[in-house]
Image (tube, rainbow, N blue to C red; front, side, top):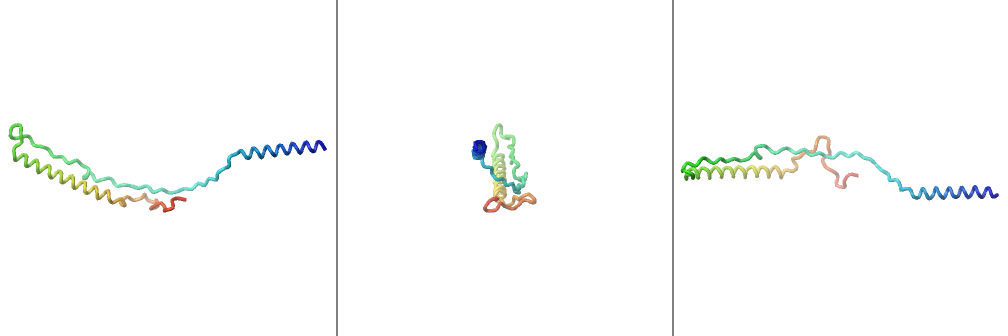
Length: 119
């Protein structure tokens, strides 16, 4: 009888030890892997004509060390036309910048992410 009680006590201690050790182990998390396609937007580079610098060269002074009135009038006209060209280029850049929908997703990519996000 003593032997049965001893075996029962040992079995009870082993069971308690297993229960304690399994309670300390962290709970395993279920991981679900899913492949999701993400759109890659391709932007068109700006036209070189719009980002080229506008250069106005000053002539050599004809009236000694100063410019003559005719030269100053020509230079003023050149600067005004250069400024008008810069303003036209900026207006064209604003038009390109406002058309955000011109960027196209890469081939095979979805058009947009659903409103609720990716599940």
